[in-house]
Image 1: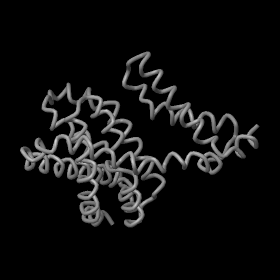
Image 2: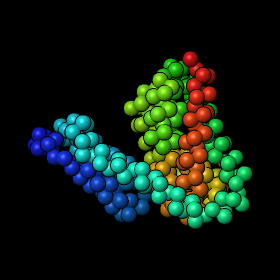
Image 3: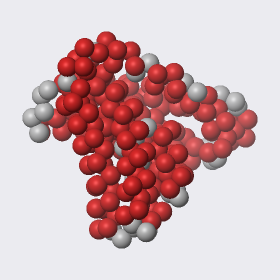
Image 4: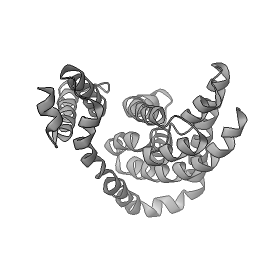
Length: 231
């Protein structure tokens, strides 16, 4: 059975889509944030691979085709931002300060926890790009000497958790301004968090889209500086 699955070109795409659809069904049925479609799809894929003894390489041969859609999907995030261009101009200073604060908070937390748990330099730099999109985060981790595979896992976990708790966190801390919600979610939980921001509203989605790009660029600079704090 595993040989048949491994030889199928689109096996990876098929089980990824099935897992995501299962996640959508569970979320609509139970209406709980924990049933995040991406989280469910990840768990589903892992279970299938283990159950049928399929190695990751065989799965990725098909699943990689889904990755090709990531770039155009990311570019499409510019559309809601363009629609809110006037709002961006009116609140430019506050938005930039918010994104910078988010980036510094992310890097600062990684630094403090690394000191607390006595991480080595490569473990420390592996976690620095946790709150930005995977494409940029992988490059930063590799350049600084981190463990790229763990960086990817941490980025995904950060995004999924951000997606799950974003709305609840805003309620707990009484954050009601749409711009503030979008900036916070985008700078903390990148594209996966932005999906939640778009569910919350057009302004939240637009600001979160902006935060992804700006936070990514600022993290490139910030991570290079913070990397020198632990040797």
